[in-house]
Length: 335
Image (tube, rainbow, N blue to C red; front, side, top):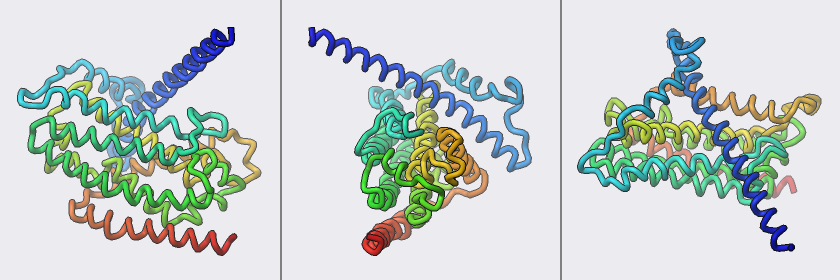
């Protein structure tokens, strides 16, 4: 009888986790759909254009129409491509992008998985997507795709080092790699948020995160003026959609991670505003970061490859190490 009860509990837990996974997938897909629309609108306004305004009221169904177009397009595979790897590469890129969302706490109760190593879980899984991008470029058997893949490997691996090191300061201050614990450590007002004592780490994290996302001004892996479309130049239809989906899912993930690590998570900026639900504060901070990413795309030009690598190794890496040193001194004096 106890074995039967245990089996029923196991299936119940599985059903709950599966249902939550489906809900999170729908939330993320909804975010991607309208993040693309919002980005096009924002860039249009900044460039004195209207932006999408044809499909649906105010153009709200433009992204939906684009997705349907991609799903209906012919799926082509180059004759000389490595077929199995060519097919598998978009999957390797997308799956880690979605899985890392599970580690992000939206409130003290609304969290998919309360991992004690949430920070490590995020950086470890997000690095796998680099393999998918490189694999897609190499398997296409196209020189432009290969160049894009190699650029991506150099860029994402180089910037992942200062990205990870910049986070160590917040881990040292909170004494935990649990993202929920790090967010709870910042309660009590914006003067307790990590972006103030960790201003060096915060700046390094933001720059490295933009580079990890392959977004302007660090979009060298898919530089249209040089490489046609970079690592996904040979992809079409839903496989191309997978690469684009992964990029915007990472925008969701990195905005959530930044909010949790440096901007107090779901906590209000002033204690007297605690009556407002935490999810509202999280979404406001989250949306501000997403807007800044779109703003950067509309404002900054693409940097050169040598400038990109020089910034990562000669500027961000030393600054991230300096941040750890300063944090250690601060904690020794404070304690």
